[in-house]
Image (cartoon, rainbow, N blue to C red):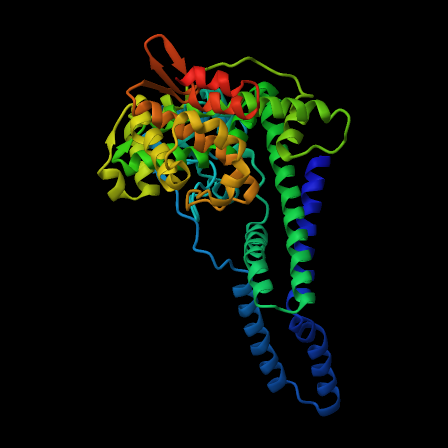
Length: 482
């Protein structure tokens, strides 16, 4: 009950913020809403005239409302639509959804909205998070369906059904205001707009963002608690953890693994490849989350919403262990064809039609080595006359190398980030140098590249990292790569 009260209170705050910011961001509203009506009343009492002025006033007010609506509408193109299919196409999933809906006395979803990622991975991409707020259609991020178990997917269905979506008109308006104000900040500074307008809009953006973020955390937490009361907290904690990891990792995974393969006219198995990619990141992610959960006992303010939700769920009974540990993708017949359809929706049908299905083992030839060659080719000037035995000396001067390092045009990197990228560049140079000398190359997403020549084994990126961290000497490095 207290959580619902806080949600309603936050929604009221969002409404009053929206109304109050009208006066700050559009001073004409103050004139039209307060001063002009008082003038009309005075004109009516003194002169007895009211029809023509009121008609003019209504026209002006409507014009201001229309202008304001344009101001609060984001100038960016709309998000791409997810691939939507009737739930009847997936009989087992439909029956499970009906059973879950009956348990919570909700109407079962009739369709499923699918995308590659739970979060947009390219500008104006598919936003399943938004679909969750404004639609009762079941959302299914394809990349996650090998890491989610069927039981976790059932918890996801339950959360979709019990999720409090709030007043759609208010949430839409606040989201639009945030997008518009965020896009305007840099433009306003470049145009040298009056300082007070810039400051007022910056404050408005901060208020919108803080309050809307708080509302999102509250509604997510309420849905967690409702589902955990039936399914137990263990399943919800696992789902919450995996979904948060996917929000962070999946965009990089698609951009660095799936898309380069498509450029080579090949489509890797998306869910399987992501499962391997996520498993490589998971240990570092889990350590950070566990550390944050321990720190929350010493501080009443969690660092982020994930930690707050996990902390609350950890106080509840764990409930039953995993009932059905099979991957959630088994609920979708002919999953490989479905992956192609979703990929075509986001990459474009023409790119996917020309791509052949390949095994994950081919990701080395199709994505990893071409990316390494591209990285080294862009920075070929750094390696003129150099061999792999010059890497220790190059690494010593990485600060100066960062000055002339050319990153991928897709990414804008600060100088510190470019300097941090130098060990990767040198690792790529080392790997290609040895590959071109006919070392056998093996690759797993979990372990990275391994180079073998007879009984010798070298992990080039690990070796350069150790050299950079000074855990090995230049002599040790030279002995390893000779």
